[in-house]
Image 1 (cartoon, rainbow, N blue to C red):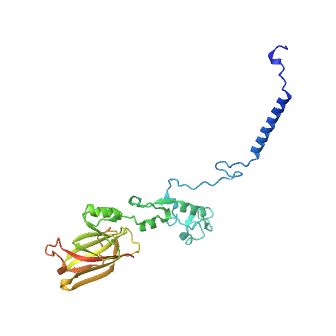
Image 2: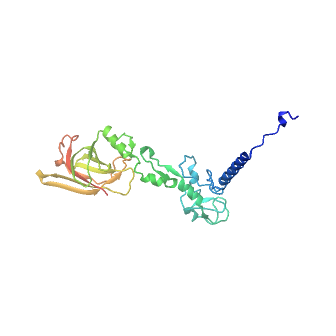
Image 3: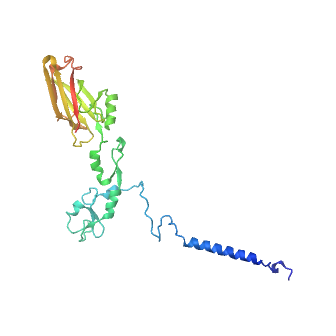
Length: 304
């Protein structure tokens, strides 16, 4: 039995070898203890003792039925402050003041309290402007969408020519006038008089900031009737003024008028309710031919 390898006695380690093994064991134990006692880096999604770290705000594409953000009573978009009954049915502030102490939905007698979570939702729900295809890149809260689009500078303007259905931004309209209808376009500075010849039909003026103006002249029995419009997609309350003058030194004749310009998007064609500048027939060149009748006028555009 003594010769079987399984029962052979293992060789004894020397004293030096045993000391080296013990030292290595103590070193490994010390290292493990230090690692255990060292402050732990928070794991992803956690902080400290299991408290979740707040995620960074990121834009996310989501789909939702926006009518759930409408007041269930008046059907207008909900906007802060928003109130809720004891059960949780929400209502806008305007309707809240008109309702009795009874919920419009569950009909229980209740008082209304602010619903901050829904206010946070409606403030965070951003939508695109209807006129994104015309250049508007704004992202606005859902409840401000209608107000924004009423004042959006990228809203559509329309071609006033008969049987022309074109619409687009002012820059698109400018290109359309020049390339399709061959209307003459003149670029000029504000608050500076500029003399040019106005012919029957339409002429486009472009301000130094790209704003468009339309000058139109038609022949009437009393003379050449000139109207001038500011082309804007939406009326903003800012009104340009215009100073028109015409003179004929040979006849010692001069005529000057300053007036506020009518703003229009030309949806219904050229407006009728505007200031008219009438040039007498005797000042019109080629009045006999009519089609080529024109007059030299001085125009000064005055911004708001």
